[in-house]
Amino acid sequence: MIFRQLFEPASSTYTYLLACPETGVAVLIDPVAEMVERDLRVIGELGLRLAYTLETHVHADHITSGAALREATGCQVAGPAMDGLRCRDVGLQEGEVFRVGTLEIHPLFTPGHTDGHHSYLVDTGSHTMVFTGDGLLIDGCGRTDFQSGDAATLYHSIHDKLFTLPDETLVYPGHDYAGRQLSTIGQEKARNPRLGGGKTEAEFVAIMAGLNLAYPQKIDVALPGNQRCGDGSAQVPSA
Ligand SMILES: [Fe+2]
Image 1 (cartoon, rainbow, N blue to C red):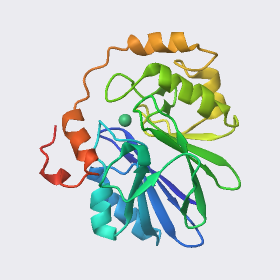
Image 2 (tube, protein in one colour):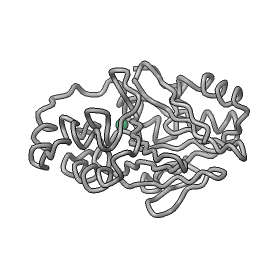
Image 3 (spheres, helix red, strand yellow):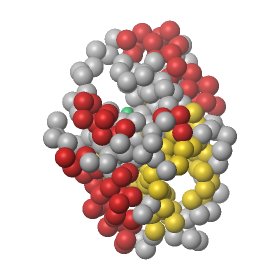
Image 4 (tube, protein in one colour):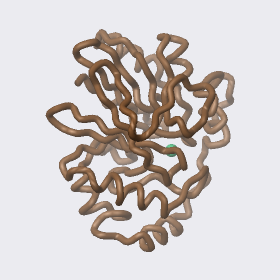
C-alpha cells in the first residue's frame, strides 16, 4: 500500500493518504480545508488519482476539504452513512467493505465522540492499521462533552471493539497534540491513562466528566461547514 501521514498544525489533525499500488487509486481520510494545495501536490508527486475523501465523523475543530477536493479532482466524498449528510456521495457502514482499487477498508462503528463516528481498519498483508479518528487517541481519547458525545458509549467502543483487535495492530489517530504519530492496540490497552490498565467504565466516565474542557473554538463554523462537506467554507469567517 502507498501511505502518507499528513499533518495540519492549527488543529493538530492527521490526514491519511492511502493508495492502491496496482491501480494508483487513492483515498484521503479526514482531509482539512486549509491543506488542499498540499494534499493535491502530494497526490500529484506520487502519480495517484484521488478517488475518495473519507471522514471518520462530522468534525467540530476543523472543516473538511471533501467538497473542495471533489471540485478539484472529481473524487467522491465518503463517510459514515448514519451521519445522513446529503453532500456525501458514498455512505459506509460496519460489515460492508469499502474498496479503493485493491485496498479493502473495513468500517468499524465506534460511537461515543459523536454518535456516528467510525474507525477504519486496513490489513495491508504485512500489518494491520486502524484509523481511529477522534475515538481512541495516543494516551488519550476524543472528548465526549459536545455534539452527540457520550463517555460510556465511547468506553464500550474502545474496550469492546478496538481493544479486541490484535495487540500489534497499528493505531493511527485523528489528532495528536504532542507530535506522536502512531501507537499500537497493545500499548493503548496497557498504558492509556484514561482507558488502559483495566480502567472500568465508571472510572472512565468520572475522568471524562472531570476534564472541564473549553468550548471548542471553531465549533460554530466547523459543524455547519462540515454538514455541507466543506462546501462554501471559503465564505465562512475564520473563528
Ligand atoms: Fe472530532
